[in-house]
Amino acid sequence: MRLVVYPDARVVVTAPSSFGIATIERFVAKHSEWLHRRIARTAGRKVIHINKAEIAMLKKRALQLASERCADVAERYGFQYKKIAIRAQKSRWGSCSRAGNLSFNYKIAALPAYIAEYIIVHEICHLKEMNHSKRFWALVAQVIPNHTQLRKELRSVAIVYH
Image (cartoon, rainbow, N blue to C red; front, side, top):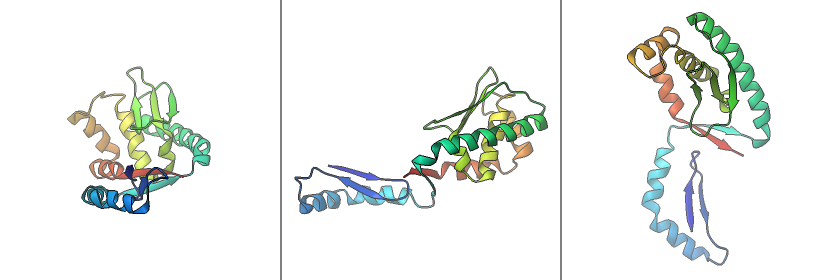
């Protein structure tokens, strides 16, 4: 049997069809402490629902958003980048290569605009500082003074597909 708690606190039990409801209930009861801990972790999360049929449209919107905002932000800092790519990354919102290429997760198009802006500024600042040093965060703070709060908020975002 398998027990899963999704980011939106949905609990799903998978069991062979030959298992009776009593067996499944005992399994869930046996793991109730674990279940409660996992459900508690979902509290306060910002859940964003994405319809799988809308992924292509989100990729187009993400490219448009990144292209427009990167141009503005890079100009503000006086930095230059080479290319922008939109990807379906599992664990990153964006990245910056040493060659000056920027890559963003298509899911930025589903985020609130102010969080997407933070991600874009963050990656643009990596054009100057390829690390997370004090100098890097000082660059980010020039445009996003509340970056610490936004970073924390971004970490609480959970994407759920339908």
